[in-house]
Length: 154
Image (cartoon, rainbow, N blue to C red; front, side, top):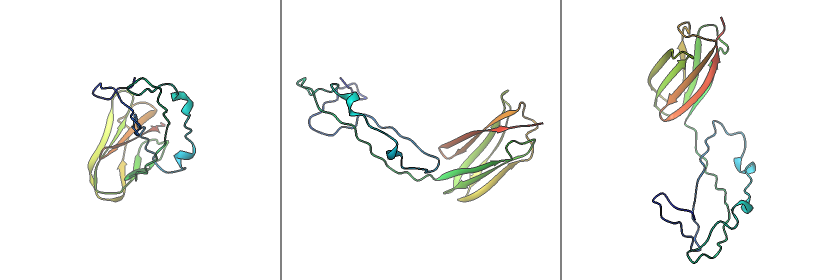
């Protein structure tokens, strides 16, 4: 038996009922995701019953809803770097942005501010305060988070 968030049984009375949703957000569109997702109805056969305990026919459906990506991290360069690093970021609208560069021993550099729509370059003149050869970065724009790694060479 399937139950809802309140713990009540989900009753299927010849109506369409959404049991779950999968939200996937691509950084850029490279294909139509519906072309690559296969729905196998056999995996849910014999799983659903109506209130009288009669087997209920159920099928899967794929509904794709395009959502415009507001912001993008265009590039992080040079990568690898021996000291300085810059971030090219495109904002689709005015937004608060924070960029953090982190090392493995909890050292960090950060820059934050409010930026207008458009392309911005945020530069860090030196990463010498950070330890190790692998750095990670976090770019937070509004409620969106972008992450990646920077290789640091001496």
